[in-house]
Image (cartoon, rainbow, N blue to C red; front, side, top):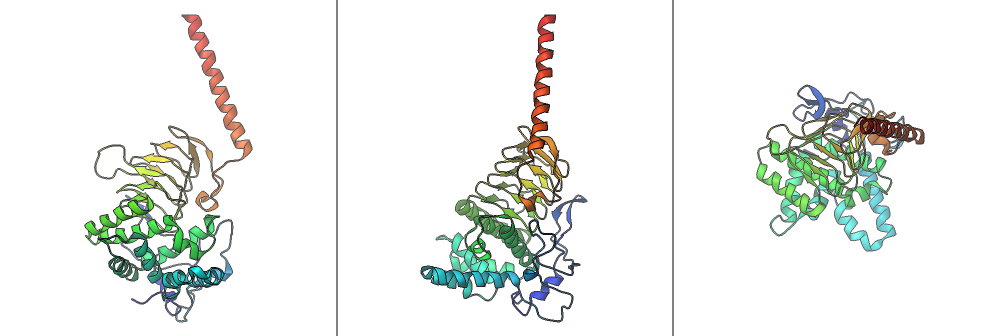
Length: 355
């Protein structure tokens, strides 16, 4: 299959819908990678802009007329960034040329970058390059996801300078795309190779994602260090996870034992979510929280153990990346805590008096 270059980008119109149906036991939590639907959107890309009601007109691809050829705006942006960076920093020109400018599409450039980051004496870069290219070039779902994930990095991470820098340097992006390849290999029955890639990602990037885990599109693994995602975990579209997040089990039980994260959720740094529980769509989990029960959609939970402390106004907090609440909100929480403590003290005095 050809690259999604200038003459073939319209093939995106045959991919899954950007709002991919997430199913897990009839629940909207996991991507159904077995079916390939058609885009129903008149405008394909991008769909995850932050704080923008309409997509950036400079990056929109129209597929109204699929008979006409259109460009790949993400790949064009990556190449332009690389050219500008090569002019600014001549010392990096060879690196930028080898990593990006010598390739004819995003798929091959990504395969080159990943293979060179993950190589070791037993997994040679040339071998990894063949593995990544073969999987990505024959999987339209992955081709769509690598672009939506790259857009998520650019939109949601204020430290991300360009599409080029995200492709070259962000280990959260690298970990996620390697997982997509490993997941495809796992489904093909090539489990040993999939686990080998998981192991290398854990060693190199400090991110441990089981190749069987199901992960949607438009995902941001911000910073990514210390993220652990278990075998039966399912993550919906447009989710953002900060560093140190654990989606784990509660013990040695087997079967479906890991969390299901609804689309648009925002999971704060070092949050630990354990067991086969559901984090509702558009929910926010505060940093450092321990979650062991279902979280309602569009709610905000925090604490150890986590409790609902309010509700989120944003439809998808993962897009805004606002981890804090308003001053008035926290004032109400503080008043409620003080009242609870006061009532507890009064009850304790009564008990002492009765004694």
